[in-house]
Image 1: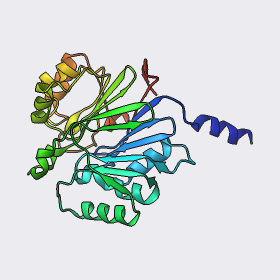
Image 2 (image 1 turned 90 degrees about the vertical axis):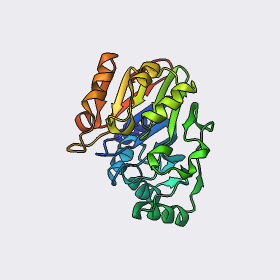
Image 3 (image 1 turned 135 degrees about the horizontal axis):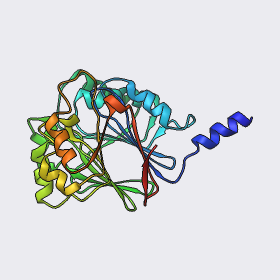
Length: 263
């Protein structure tokens, strides 16, 4: 009984924000939690995300309120297939841009089979997770015919009182420039570096506007040369602390809305 009570106390949801950048190899998966509510942004290239969810959600909690697939590429969405099978997903939001791959077709089938509510995300939308608000900064609706699915990669700006974080998916420098020129960006405490640290993302002007204290790179070992040295240098010049899932494992950030710390 004592052991059970300790486990319950340890896993009981707290009224604070927890960000977990899961270690899923060469891909993205970010778990955003506030109290008993969860948002999963992307699911990685395989089922590694299940271990991350098991370690960071209470064992009795089998419900994920919202899943966002930033764009239909295997390294961001494959793990979502098994998540939908094993968890009660209330709503899943993803782009309607077509990328006819086996993973995309299987995810659509599973969503239909499990009768998961489906929606789309566009610039100007607002999502809420308890007291955490997330603004959709990208994509814009005019990009429904995009030739490169990275062009529709969802960018989310999250805020919990005085704590802000930016999740950029695979958004590249062209998108960063549009966001910068339209003044949609702001300084944040934590940045999920775009496109696994590719040289085509995380431009110098972009970094100077968002000025993160911590930059997290979701990347696998023995990959495609990510993160690129020039990106690491840009972050170093501005004294941004960098953490990488290939070297540090899952990165966990906690905030009470005023302060934040690594868990």
